[in-house]
Length: 242
Image (cartoon, rainbow, N blue to C red; front, side):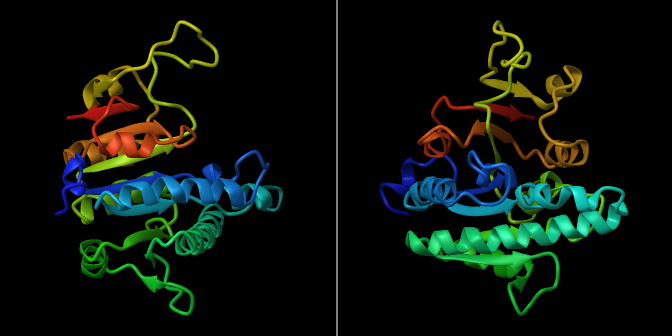
């Protein structure tokens, strides 16, 4: 481990990116400027020697076809969403390549002409080789969110923490947009988050992280340098701990 890498608090992390984060100010789709900025944030922690797994959502693409999906069978709609995450994964990999970040995509859906299938041991080997691994296709099953995929992949690859990138810089006592007196938690336990009914992740994902004693850090991907400050252990976002 290099001297610079030793400064990082976490050696291996799972970053959960929503598809909506890629939209920027657009109503749907991928905003190239925003995509490049996010990849720059990821590059900053790769350069610290941090091993990075990324689970990407598909809401930015699915939102564009939402009218057509109205009334669609739920399982069918979920498969459409899973395919959207593969599209986002390809765009993310391309942007990483442009900035000199070596990335591999693994999909829970079998689309071998486009991306390789998810194989746990291979994913871990890639991480150990310093390659960023993008996990697409959700869990490969309908009725499960990409939050659940993030918790699952984080547990499988032995990540030390799940970093949930959002548009808000942490977890608040109330909605800060509606309540100006709301304050941000620096840290909160899983049990307290449940008792306060805080919607941090979907129930399945949250329960999996709690049971596996896998902490979650909620932070804003819109704040420049926030991701790097998180992995350096600085006071950024909100930590959910066991």
